[in-house]
Image (tube, rainbow, N blue to C red; front, side, top):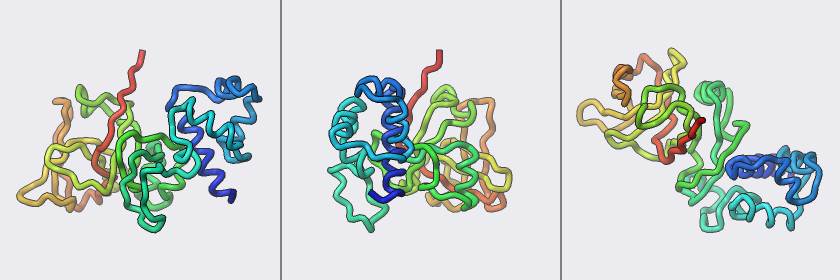
Length: 223
């Protein structure tokens, strides 16, 4: 397997183990292997044998084809059609710094370090991240994970993610179009659910970059 493909598969394995709420050590114990072996699979330093791949897919409840190729068997898209919606996909899980690097074009989606499995159909333009503030509470809690898809056009009231490059602000709010326009072109408003946060009117001066419309929400319960 080419080195880049091995690295990509390792990221998918690492994300699947994490999403299953398992540790690499627990997976290693299950197979009777050293933790370093599983770590090497996750880092793409060695290729997981087919027998272990099939067994791991059952443990983490992920189709083995998805672990191997990043594509679900039901996703019959041609490789050249990058915008096809897949039933399940490993989505880049970006940090704040990675999001800012993405919008400044210093980083591509493929360069985002971590991945997580999306359980909602989404396109290759999708991105996951942690909600950065309390502006959408109580509807959506700070630190919980959302997946947004740039290929999904927002409707009034949909939750969207936008970066204001002028101020380096990452906003997750409800989309409110201004006038009859339903398009992403500014101006438009971003409304919070929390009354302690103001409605923001986004204009071209803000140099906004759309990350996408929310397609999935994973609430993180903290003790």
